[in-house]
Length: 202
Image (tube, rainbow, N blue to C red):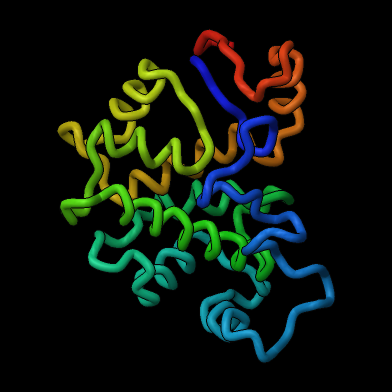
């Protein structure tokens, strides 16, 4: 695998901003800064359980009703679970308001990225389009790695929006906010170019 790590050396593309960090679009509110006038807060309250958090089923219902997937198929329950897991820092299986806002910002970025590369409006992307989408997010993967991703997430060689989001979640989980990965990357990047090579088993 040849990989450029977003935020280290190569920088982020238009869709790879490190959400969750102050100074970048979509960063979550700090504790105590939630405004009752925030339209996202009203949306969150409408779906959150009595514990003030959102589980996978509640998230799926919210995303379906919001129409964020547009003309694409609604998100599956499994994809909603992995989206929550991406931000579930206390391992509760649910997300609070700050995480909800962070996810919403990420989804909008991923959707815009998907629309940009889905030039024929088919609602799915092929191998070469996925490669463009991944590059736009600031990742540089080897052709072999992209092929592996296509095999994992595609249906008959085409990746639909739901699976595309699942792929984005996995990429983010492997890189952003993963201190072990950052340390591993820096140790391999001897020339400090923001690019390393390693085998898949690494």
